[in-house]
Length: 160
Length: 105
Length: 95
Image 1 (spheres, each protein chain N blue to C red):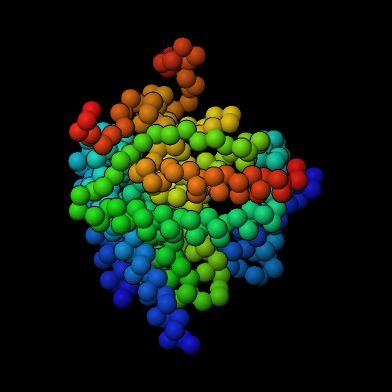
Image 2 (image 1 turned 60 degrees about the vertical axis):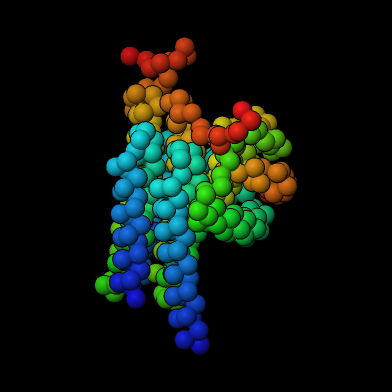
């Protein structure tokens, strides 16, 4: 029930940002449509941990700036590779160990890897990921180990 | 103060355009579909990121800036998912990943 | 200045179209169309600032949604040969 209320609050915030109307009548319409969507979501039985991961907690927001910094660094690296005349690439498929215990943690880890240019997750298993990498330098392991550790740290902050 | 924000915002937009064009050049230059995905990812992350950051600086603290951030958040969530789906589909479709030709075999 | 930004985005859209036309595999074309869609989203934002009407932001948000769903739908079609059915246990598609 609390989760449904949370979903309603998130939907209503989304509605407010998109509409930009603050007249009482229109805000009432917004409440009505958010309530309708919450009702539909309850009937579809998607209001669960996966549908609304509010318990992801503060740690995820602490992880994001580090991820953006990492994305920027690897963007510069890939840009340099593209602009080098000889195109010095050496693509390879490697297997990474994933120490996360939940699906959510693995999903965050896999998407973080894909988000940083130079590495793409192609397959996700119980405790490992297949990663396609643009060069050997990207898979020396140090950065991914740190990302793995940080995602595990985010995961431990999840209450549910 | 306004001038500083103006300069910062245009620098950010130019940087975004740079990453976007370089990413597209990468999509053209790379030898196979997997390596092209790396280049395409640049457009989705930093190209869009810096462009939208510049626009947010232009918009100031307003509902418009919140909507711009929403667009970027959406791009950040969907881009790795479609890249991952594309990589899986390409592997399932028997596309052989490009390997660097080696002299010693 | 906004015109210059729009021109820059249009140039990279043209480059992406070249990749979509060259192929060679269908996945290259899907990838090119996907980046083309991302650029369309950004172009819509720039047009919003160019014309001074911020309503374009909503259009670009919707376009981002459609672009994502379209890419996934096309990929699912090429992976399974079907949009609704699951892959058969022995491989191949259920008919």
